[in-house]
Image (cartoon, rainbow, N blue to C red; front, side, top):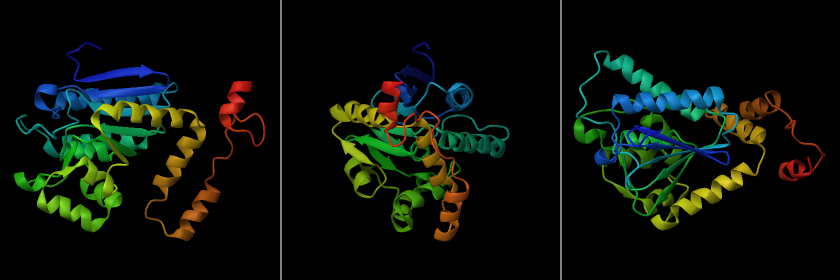
Length: 252
């Protein structure tokens, strides 16, 4: 894609990287950017066989400053909001593991973007905040559901009611981010994680992810039954019983 594209895509060695590309606005989301992002998600849904891991990040040293409040409202505001919410649900529902790679601002709608990923890896420059309350708004992209599931109800309420920013180190300490590293080590850490993921069975990765999300909120007994009765079984690529999938591929 050209440098003017609102979402840049790069595919290399099974890793697809989608970069929000409005650096002059700290990648604040307008409708055109969201349409471009939705198109990429749909393409990965339909033609993503070569994608083992998806990384979502932002250009220019920031992840995403949230919704662009300078954008004129959509004529069907509720309908468009639903389209945005469903797009982020589809991102989460992809069979591929999704990593949010965060530097700089990750505010409000940007935080909702990041929470739609399976996990978050951030640099020390990262600042996470929910500022809906500063603007008299309430979440519409899933923050009130995903944030407490990620960090617990009390900490989620603290973030939502104070609207204060949290550092990358604070985010990792509360479980919002999986890792916080120096900014100059962020690319290497994400590369390390994607390499580990790619070394494992895509079948297992997808099914483990599905089981986690499908049983969210279930009582233990129901979850155990679901795991057993909805089990997808062995990866067809396994060629030798008891041999790791990577070894089976090397000998194949």
